[in-house]
Amino acid sequence: MTALWIALAAGALAAVVAILVVDRQRRRDEAQAYLKGVRSVISGDPDAAIEALSDAARLGTPEAVDTYLALGALFRREGDVSRAIRLHRNMLLGPALDPSRRPEVERELAEDYRRGGMLAEAAELFARHAPEDPAAAEGLRDVRVEQGDLGGAVEVQREIGGGTRDPILAHLLASRSREAPAPARAAALAREALEA
Image (cartoon, rainbow, N blue to C red):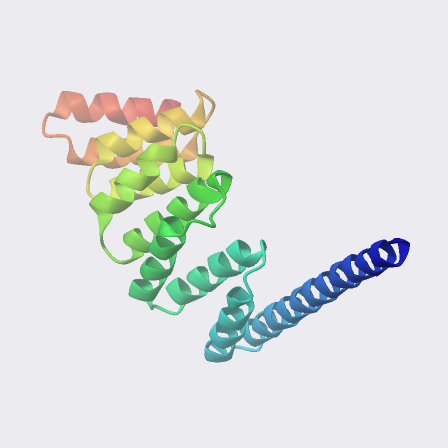
């Protein structure tokens, strides 16, 4: 009976060691693929970088989210916005995404939408996270400017700036003053811009 327990313990130990070895090898392979992708970006070879980052992401480790985000940003930078959108949408639909990472992926998707000219979709996603995420608030402000909604951009910037001297707010107010239909309103906006 003791021999049976020893054999079971040895088998369990062998299984644990095998799992650890496989996991370590997978992490090593992912790190090598990720470094190959970084080297390719640095050397100016985006196609090789996309291939290496895709290989790293396929390995399925918890760090794959960061690899997918890097890959999506590379797609966007290379002008392949539809592919970046697809990648980020699939990340949001996947069951493996940690809920704490969801806002980050949605912000990246909003940036994809913005670059693709889908400003209403970008504004919706940025607005969802703007209250707690300064990067999303800045993205929302920029989308509002691109939509021609300077009033909306001013309101977002006021929330970002917090009442301190704010050159961006001054610039937005000056732009609004140039578009104001009434001279009195234009002068008031210009004064407010000078104060900011």
